Amino acid sequence: MNYIIQLLNDYGYIVLLVALMLELIALPLPGEALMTYCGYIIYQHKMNWPVSILVAATGTIIGITLSYYLGSLLGLSFFEKYGHYVHLNKKRLEKISNWFDKYGNKLLVIAYFIPGVRHITGYFSGITKISYKKFAVHSYVGAILWTGTFISLGKILGSNWEKYHNLIKKYLIIGSLIITFILMFIWIYKAYKVKIYESTFELLDKGLVLFHSLGKIKIIIAGIAVAFLGFSLMVVGIIQDYLAAEFNDFDEIVRFLVSSIFTEKWAKAMQIFGNASNSNTLILVVSIIVIWILVKGCNKIHELKFLGILLFGTEILNYVLKVIFHRLGPTQIGYTFPSSESLTVIVVYGFIAYIIPRYSSKAWINTIIIGASLAICILSGLSMIYFNFEYPSDVVAGYAFGGVWLSLNIILLEVYRILPKLKFNKN
View 1 (cartoon, rainbow, N blue to C red):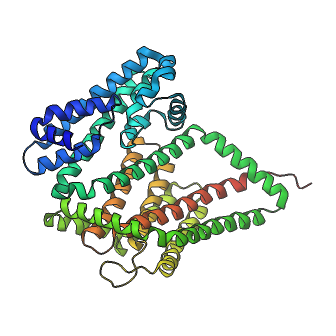
View 2 (view 1 turned 180 degrees about the horizontal axis):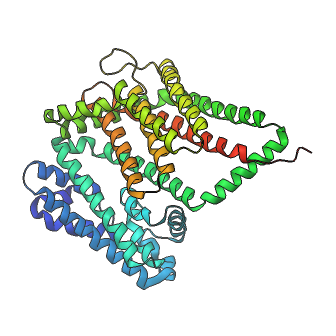
View 3 (view 1 turned 90 degrees about the vertical axis):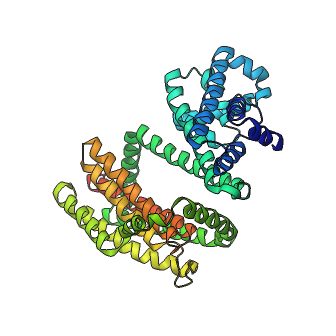
């Protein structure tokens, strides 16, 4: 690594381009550390930021394109025999194949952030004859995101690049896996939506036959939901102490990055972002949801009941979580884990991102609503970190618990929609 860093200091862009090209052909080079150090050189004003990203992305694209054509030219039999030289043995081929089956071509975008995977996705894409157009669209976008992320991080970290590089790399991998899981969930839902609906309908119908009462089945479903939520709280409570050290590292890194990226000039903007979680704004958003349900909803009473349960339950959940975790925030005044603001924001804005697209057939409106809701949630949490009201781990935990509570209510809402349609044989 020291030798490559010295070469980068001496020859700059040429070494950056060649090193990343060779890494994507599967040579064991420390591409991420190299790009982070490149960012440090940019911080010292010895290299140009946009040019460095362009050169790094070009090297990455050349490397993965060469591996794609080599995979296409040499074929599966060659790599089964000699693939171990580029870390692509039969077992790994099968593993990557399963991943592509689950996540589709989107894996090409995320794979760069996963060590041991980015080096072989080009070969695999060529072996499996993925069309060049699909391969290029996903892998080239991923190359720009990957190189831009690590070079920019190095620039932001400056003289602290070596101190934080490995920790940031770890959290980026975790984040990539979470995003991959979410994409997998979305893909499975879209691909098997009808089958999931039919299976749920059939399961509930059998349950209704077994219990001979719509009221009983509703109570059982609600009981299962409460038990699931209680179990989730208990499990997280048990592992809290184990995660305490991880929280400290995560908080230190995120706070450093936020303070480095968002200077004092962002103060007014952050105040506006923070207003997304105040009472007046949330009342306005809830009013919009109620009006939308009354105008567009098919099961108005049903949906309004669940909205009430969702909001009332959010207040109870916030209280219970504070009692369980009792972790003081940065100001040492009051408990902030998980963040009440983040939990409430993800629930309210998440519900509006669910209910409006459900009854809107216009794709552009749905895209705007979902995108705006996601942006508001992120920016609201960011403002809490910026003003040092809450720790980053408080904010992330708020998102996590809010997401669980929101998704649980949406699932129950959809299940309860089905129940009145069920028919069963009392005999």
